[in-house]
Image (cartoon, rainbow, N blue to C red; front, side, top):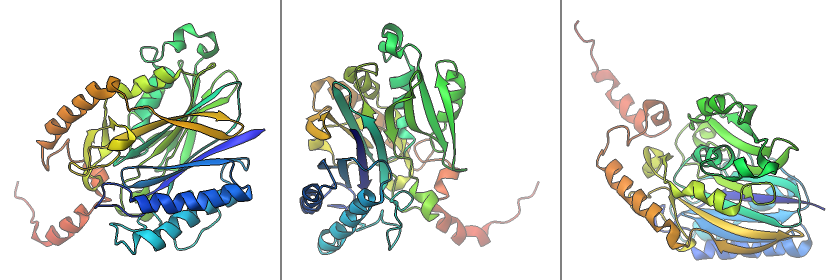
Length: 367
C-alpha cells in the first residue's frame, strides 16, 4: 500500500500579534481532521503549531496534490479563520489565504505544502520540521548538510547503501523552473545555486541509485504570489530516516548550528534559525528569533505513532545559547545591513512606500 504524507500549514491569525497559534484554532482543526478520518479520507493526522502557523500533518492513500485532501486543508483553514480567528480578532486573520475560492490544488494559494508518496519500509521513521519567521530557502543549508556533507552525515562514507549519493531537485522560484543535480559529483554546482536561498530552493531529495524519495520541502514564496509583503513563508519539511537513508541523529545534527536565515521581524531581517521544543514554539523577541520545531513519528500502515519532540533535549541547549548570542549581535545592527535584508528582498516589504513618498525630494547630484 502506498501512503502519502501531507504537511500543510498556514498563518490564519496570531495570538498575540505574530507570536503563537490560539488553542481554539488547533481544537477546531482537530475536529475537522477527525471527521475526515472517520469518513475514510485520512488514515491519520496530527495538528500542531510553529509560532503563529497552524500545521496539519495528514496521512492518506490519495497521492500528492490530491484535490480532496487539499480541499480539506483549505476548508479547515477557512473555517478556523471564520469561526475562531475573526471572532477573537486574532492578528492577521486568514493572511495566508490569498484567494477567495479553492481551485483544486492548495499550492500557489498561500499555504505551504510538503508531500511525499511512499511504500512503507520494514521500519519507517518520519521526521517533520516546521519553521516560523523565515523562507523556504532556510532548508537549503540543512538539506545540504544532511544529504551531501560527510562531516555531518557519517553514513555517506560508511554506509554502502548511501555511498552513491543523492539527487537534489532544485527550484528557481523566480523563473519557476526545476533542475536535478547529483551529489557528490556536482557538489560545487549545487552550492553555487542553493547558496542563494532567496531564489534557488531545494524542493525534494532522492537516493540516487534507486530514486527513493528521501525529503520533501515547501517552496511557496508568498511575496512572489501576492506581489507584496503579506507575511513570511514559514516553510515545512518532511524527511525519511534510517535503512539506507541518514539516521535520525545525522538529520538532527544539521540543526546543531543555528545558521542565518531571512525573515524575522516584518520579513525583513536576517537572524539565526533556533531549534526549539513545542513548548517554546512561539516567536517573541523582535517577533523571533526565527525558530524550528522537529517532530518524529514511526509510520505503520499510515498511522502516525508519536510524536517525539526531537528538540526537547538539553543536547540543543548550547545551540539555543549560540542562537541567542547571534540574535544580540545581529540586533545591534538595527536598520543596517546585513541585519536588514538587501534591496532586492525589501522590494516586497513596505519600504517601496517610503521611497515613493520621497521620490520628488531627490535631486540630481553635481559631479
